Length: 377
Image (cartoon, rainbow, N blue to C red; front, side, top):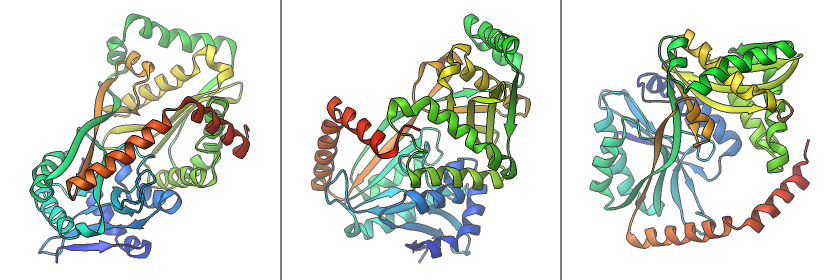
């Protein structure tokens, strides 16, 4: 049988070499499909049960992996469903497929899932980027095996195409933004001792990672009550995944220091001449000096000098991204149901959740709870 079902960490770990080979064999894959990212997410944030599909060809080579896990509840209701490993924390989710094997891979995956449909009520495929080369094959085979499905364009992501020269990039910007880039750098340099540093390898990251965390907490903890670094498991995931991807040479961190204080930073991951930005923050006390824009500009300039062709600013349509001439992309959200009854049940669960989460009172209570539980420092 061409499909092997992997349901425990030990079996998954034994697939690490094949996973890496498939990951490296297709430019479609982002850093978020790497074994390091997904296995670390599972170690600290995973729930339910692993349900990874390994697809093998007749010659014994691996065509790809479907990185699923099985969850028992959907928005509180007892509905079992398959989801991508890495949900919520990951900007781009997708299947891992060796380039050229897509047709074989998706035929086998959906044939297998249709025969095992008693194990779940539906399949949720979140945050597949609209640039994914897998989308045509998904559309081709979903309808053949699961006649009830929904597909929508959901989250906005913004990316910056990069030219070969920094001056060419500046020329694309609006007159005011272009002027501010130079003015902001000169203004802060006249008043403070500043330096911009880039860190890439594991040894460097260990020493400065806490500076980025400090900046991020200063920026957001007062507003949100707590941050991703406040809760133990989330904080452990963040540190561990950065260390692992830094060890393989894919992590990037730019920090702006003023008078030896870290005042702004941006981190990200590099693959196939693209930067996928992740954490971006500045210290509120330095906001009037535009330190966030300064560090982002330096990161872009540095990336252009190294031949990077795209600087992905990730999900969200914040105004600053468009000032840098960001271009919109979209992530697709696909739900595949075993029947219409399950589709109605999932729709009801989501409706109840959205109604409750839109309550301003609940938002305020949640903020107070997070402050009491995790503190403000």
